[in-house]
Length: 220
Ligand SMILES: [Zn+2]
Figure: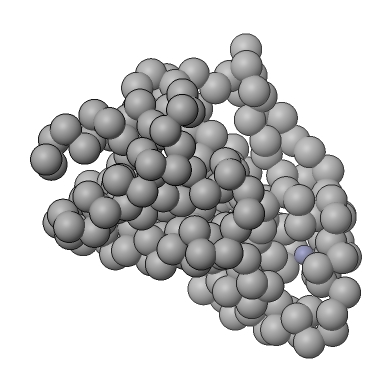
């Protein structure tokens, strides 16, 4: 059974047509999750394919930026993105944008994705990209870069926490602010945000609450 299919896209930056690999949803099999919910997979790793990259100009973003690209209608943003693309094409010309990606391909793609959202703005997207970048470095066994990426994710989860009105995003950002602080050895901060998570979502049953209670037990 094939795990990968190719989806057609029109690039909002260079306007070229291209196809990018996507993972069939029934090929995704989570074998375990770590204490920060980092998933491990049997077979194909969908984290390697969560961002879409235009193979012509290297514009890299979540799929929504291709299906609804009005975000790029502002000419100054488009100019900045185009400049970034030209640089990326030189630096990342060797990455594999098709199937059978390696963890190094996925790391490069997430760095490209982070550059996109530093231009477009997007605290939620940046928090997710840096979290996944941390996980990719963990897979690779590079602990220093893992912690550095998680530290950057923390900064954007804090911004989401301060600005969001979406309860799901608030729950997720509180969980990760607490958990990343715990992993960075900042116990007092971890305890503070775990407490806030428990207080605000007292009656909620979710994977965040369940996992947070276990992690909290470990640092008490
Ligand atoms: Zn393009």
